[in-house]
Amino acid sequence: MSLSRRDFVAGFAAVPALAAGEKLPHRVLGKTGARVSIVAFGGGSRYLAYKEEDNALAALNKALDMGITYVDTAQAYGNGVSETRVGKIMKTRRKEVFLATKTQARTADDCVRRLEESLKRLNTDQVDLLHIHALGAMDDADKVSAKGGVFEGLVKAKEQKMCRFIGVTAHQDPMALKAVLERHDFDCTQMALNAARVGMQNGQGGMVPNPMAQSFEALALPVANRKKMGIIAMKIFGQDHLVGKAPVDTLIRYSLSLPVSAAVLGMPKLEFIDENLSVARQFKPLPGPEMRKIAGEMVMYKAMLDEFFANHVDA
Image (cartoon, rainbow, N blue to C red; front, side):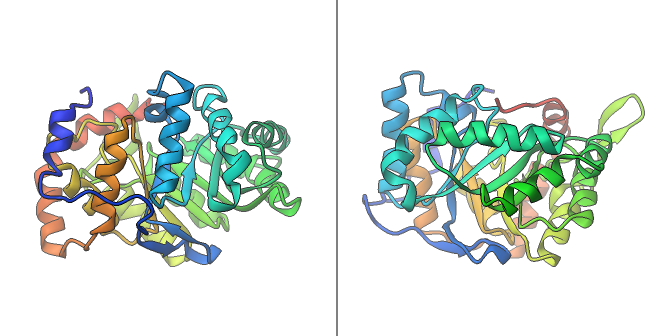
């Protein structure tokens, strides 16, 4: 489903514009102690939708001007394109930003090597947060935890002050993320947390949709909270599959009403920056009964999203 501006904007009819420079709400990013804006600027496929680099740089500058302090990128986004774009802004605005990137490495040595390349693209000698990118199913979780695996690389990078904090992201298998979070002492985690409660489970013959209870919200989120990790929500719009299924402001409010520090949002048009931040500026948590009602209405889309995210790579 393509992103419809008509559907997207429809959710903001009653939301006044956010003035440039007006402060966004901030939350503490778990045990890191860092305070970040509750909306993070996503550097994935939606950022790469700006085909002209000048427009991409203008979009990120606009987001920072309007109060975003958390920028999320990854080595895999455009094979370094996203990091390169972000790095051009970091030349002059690094001190304003909590900067997170991700590594696709699954060995310790490869993790450190790739991070060195990322730091060059990002024009910095240290990122605030380094994530393991896109944890898969249980076999991938075992690779992460193996001797000489990527978790050891993250620890080494932190010891060498190449990053301040370490984390892991997942949008595929809640059970795998739960296992990895229980095994290791991450500072942060980023997971798919949306009103459809997306989540996959490894099953016979490949990936199969799982019941509503088998979701990141039900399985991985409680572990992260118990261990006081900084939690970042992603896939708020279900990679646009939920746009038009519910008002966009409702989708944003649902994810931000969970016990998270921030939500990463893709903003492929300048007007989306205004609209997303307007919702964030006026954010009020949804009551529990309303969240359950929304989730119940979205459950019909869960199987479709699970199947989509089983093989999704936001690169």
